Image (cartoon, rainbow, N blue to C red; front, top):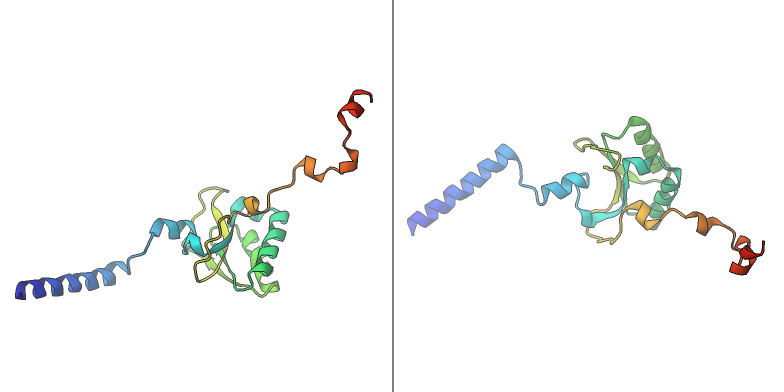
Amino acid sequence: MDKEVNKMAKDELQQHMDKGRYGTPQVNPDEQRKYLGTFRERCFLSMTVKEMGNPTDRDHLLTEIQKYPEGKLLINGEVPETLQSTFIALASKNSVDFTIVNDATVDSEDSIGLLLVTDHAVNEEIIDIEKKYPPKTDDETADPKEKKSFFGKLFD
């Protein structure tokens, strides 16, 4: 019995020393790295670096900010400073908390550049801004009155 207690004490001491040396172990570190230090389940919306440069996507972000006033922006610190300042100004103008995540990376324009998140699980099914708000195609933007019938096209 003393051996078991002694072994448990050594295990706890080892865990304590490991925490001091390496920090507290993270749950799903790859997911947290991808989602700027948070979990996917806490995200309302995501924007890639490329999408951050699109004015239409910025308008959609404002819609989401109004829909989720408790949200907070996480901005990837590797995004160009001009984009960062644009979104910092947008957050300030709309009274939204934001954080610049400096330990994030940008591998390509498809890397996550910005997230609208909360501190608890919301489990949004679709968070990608362009999937939530798909770009309108030419057919959708054309005036329906301009469309001709099959016979109208034949005899024109």
